[in-house]
Image: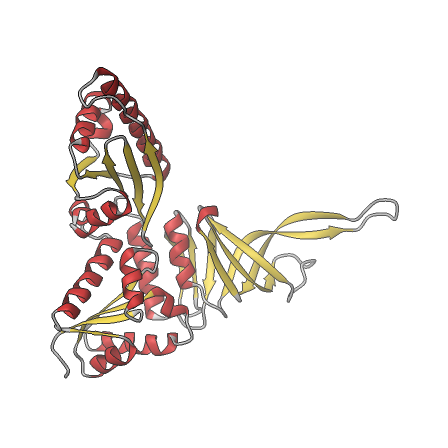
Length: 356
């Protein structure tokens, strides 16, 4: 994401959307009551004579919409913002009528709030930093099968599965031929995804020797791709293997500031502390008590809570933790760590000391 202009006195920040991850950040920044300004298309009827039917034409217009609904459509790569029109660049567009602005990659919008909350500004700053970091792809491979996932800002997205029936005996010529076809198919798929998604590095992992064989194949046939590949061991394949790569810290070793890896590892720390009755609090009441004692070192908050009926209470706790020099981490509900945090009530804290 790129910040084009900022005027906090007027409560306005203008941003350019660069990736799907940016749309996810905006989904958690834009709230009911905000005003969003953007160039859009507005359907409008055109008068005609009585012999011809009325025409409906989509006209380009710059609108300001007071937000009532925000929906993220990840598979359509669009953020849809709905509400009444409060500003229009054309006089023939009536104010008060409802309109939906569809925000996509490469669009520019202006967000106006009565007051920008600290966690909204931090998320905006994180989105800008994220656009400057390397993008990571994880490939978990075994005999004749591979799953490909992207590590996005909001979580892990599995985007492809490549399967070949290798058949034959393990060291037969037919099997070797089929394995080469499988490796070619996988390599070409990886190249297509890396070019489309602007991926810089690929972690190739798995439980057996397939990953080493694949890497050797890449070195001989796709040397440019091989230079972007890091090899890692896992005990299993599939989605579980992908999350094992993240828990092992491999993504962090590839680049040090990955959001998803940090969130998953912090939630795992919470669970470890719970298991040994250690320095941890979870659930709204326990965390609030710990915060009031100034005992919270790291506060974990599920992003869904900041859109719930208790968001004001959650924001109060977040601000209090910051005032006592604690770290606040908003955890995405889109990955394994978020699912585990949700099961704990959506809020947990790693403590400096026990409060009871």
